[in-house]
Image (cartoon, rainbow, N blue to C red; front, side, top):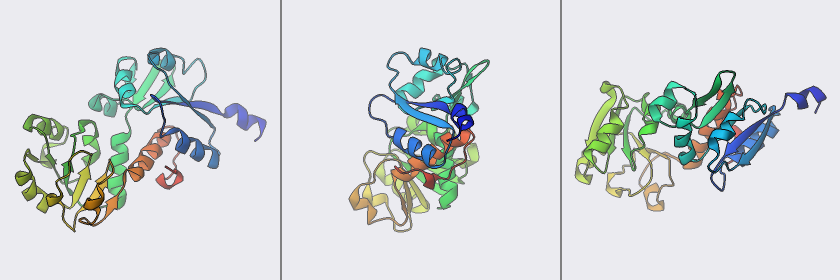
Length: 250
């Protein structure tokens, strides 16, 4: 490495609560592609505000927030928020600016990129916890329905989408069965999975591991690791480094 390359290298910190799943893939991709980043993990504990305030004076390139708890806490300490972060009420990337730190939320962008890459269809059914912060990532679909624990929770999820895209809120398996037959894409967010809803023509994007018995009932399957790769790629792209998801080993 030349001297000028070394001086151009800037730290990128990965804030996590304990064991980091993002640090090693980010570090490996950075080293393999000779990015001017020094990636390292840190646990900010209760000092997140001070840690983010130190990004600019200490010459950091930015901070990645892996833990959902930290992502929510960052809303109160980040001065400038991008629209995705405002809508999701979360921050997963913080970049220092002269006027203060700026917060981004790139996970829904990663989901949208994944759906676009695989082009599984345009009618989706969301199964599992209604992660409203990811609803933005479904905007490329024609219709989105949800099997929810309650009608208000499902409505809150669909309200994040433009009206023409809002499908049905099902609160019982029998209601969801009709919607499932019309869907070509299942987004599985974890929790109980009614196997009776699955069809051989369904493609499944799994944000959490799919039960083994479900794999035999569906067509295409995208595991959680693939979604993580797209998320890491979106984080680095916001830093100016456009790496494909395949650049990350998770």
